[in-house]
Length: 334
Image (cartoon, rainbow, N blue to C red; front, side, top):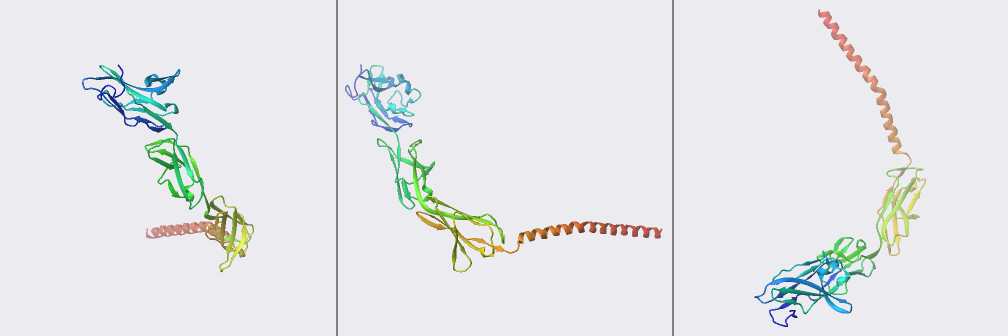
């Protein structure tokens, strides 16, 4: 005897706490369910079914008879009043109607109502996708049905707020997930933050003092989006005047003279703006002080090596004379 829920007695019922769950593909879902029957009966058997059209007829097929549910569905209830079910690793085909049936020692009963499961996918959106530093960005995580709280990640790191003022470091790939099921993520979306040059710096190919006639290259680098397309070089000679001395990312000075001494500045520019490097000092001398130091050092070593044998010989002679005097004194005493 099979009866619809509530059609015979209020003692016989099946209640679905979440009759229209929505879950993300690849995640898991729990159908929270309870069932009741008269106290004089004892539950002997339970089963969950899925509704399917077979040859044009609507039929309820036990999940245990559907191969795709093997090792993915787990009965969380018992043989008393809990009939909850969990389905893991949800796939598109899992969407549909689900029913519960239980058998007591007297009758078999099935639910009249059903659980309708919707399987959706997360759609991450960044609005707008391209901004300038200082603009407001909004992150939106959508789905085909309402979801619980969603969380955001940027390049694998949590994002505290879905609305923020974009800075250069905010550029990257973003994805969203349902809180508590962070392992199932949306496809990433990219935020492009454009900004004028930052962290402009100058690298000098020759460290220290320069001698007249030597060569040196100054290379300018910066962080910018879009990349810097113009570099301008300036030199300050100590007065209030600043002279433009070149352009391009590398300033080549193949044969320096005394006039090249001064403070050098690189200005990096893109279509959004410009920024300057800190000052770099170049000092040009007429004497190669490093070569002089090297020659002096070599000279000291040569002198030391020449005098060392003389000191050794002199010391040996003093020791020998001292020994001879001692022996002569002892002989006279005898």
